[in-house]
Amino acid sequence: MTTGTPPPPAGPDTRVAVKDVFGIDSPLTVPAYREPTAHVPEVDTAYRFQPDVTLALLAGFARNRRVLVQGLHGTGKSSHVEQVAARLNWPCVRVNLDGHLSRLDLIGRDAVVLRDGQQVTEFQEGIVPWALQRPMALILDEYDAGRPDVMFVLQRMLESDGKLTLLDRNRVLAPHPAFRLFATANTVGLGNLNGLYHGAQRLNHAQIDRWHVVAALDHLPAEEEAAIVRSRVPSLADEDGRTLVAAMVAVAGLTRQGFRAGDLSTLMSPRTVITWAENTEIFGDPAPAFRLSFLNKCDEAERPLVAEYFQRCFDRELPESCAPAAT
Ligand SMILES: Nc1ncnc2c1ncn2[C@@H]1O[C@H](COP(=O)(O)OP(=O)(O)O)[C@@H](O)[C@H]1O
Ligand SMILES: [Mg+2]
Image (cartoon, rainbow, N blue to C red; front, side):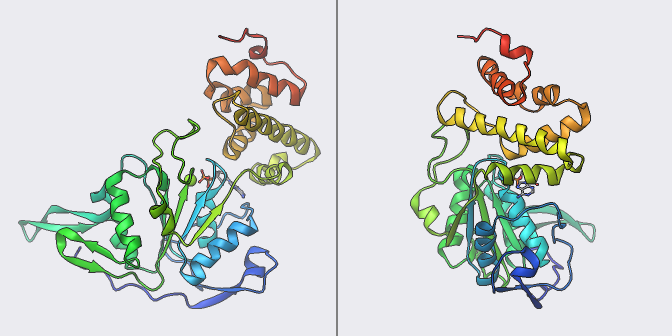
């Protein structure tokens, strides 16, 4: 363990009303901190909470439940957890389990350091033991992309009441009472079944079973998604902007339908719609912005169909819609 680690700060020192802080019609109050500290995420005032998911996450914070948020990419999983933490002033760190992260990155490793002119070997703790001993929410992002060695470590921790055994160091760390664990995943149990998430591992039931709450965050009703986009790009808040954003969300809806029907191998995420709106502001025209934000990411063979979706919602041709469909 790194020398000189300060004693962990105390836990929450106040309670806040869910109704006041999240605008959700609920009598609940949840523990929180009066003051933000170093690791508290910044409040994003444009973030719109989805009450079901928010309440699930609040149960995680208030009652120490492990919450796994599942949903397609770009639906707001990671930012939802962070924004709940931000509103509670709860310190929060996020670690992406994508294919590169190893067991040693998580747990820690021996490192040679210079101390009083001497080279000594010292254990430098990884992100998990560091967070575990603090009043901290740890988000395991892209939980379904974790390598087997990483999943093995996490699985052992989940199975032992959250205690972390540092095997090579012969130590067992107990979690701080205000430590909280969250995860996000694109898939639950299915791995890369629909071809959308390369690198996603199939999570087995034992892995899912250790999560107390599994919340699903999927595409929202069009009006709700449009409101999110308008909140992100304030210049689209007027009447013209409203019409424009509605058409953008309609295109996104068609790509999702096309994906479900097997006509497209990709789909527009809410994140892509936001990017498209931002790019429209930059280029002053939704058509080139569409090409740069989404169309060019599509397989060439699928571009005519995607261009047709645009044509249907904007009543304007893109050059791509005339291109012969590749076979
Ligand atoms: N409910 C929402 N309100 C405002 N912005 C949102 C909302 N949901 C998603 N976003 C925005 O969409 C983008 C993608 O969100 P993110 O949390 O990274 O998605 P995920 O983790 O599901 O891939 C971010 O820029 C985020 O701020
Ligand atoms: Mg994410």
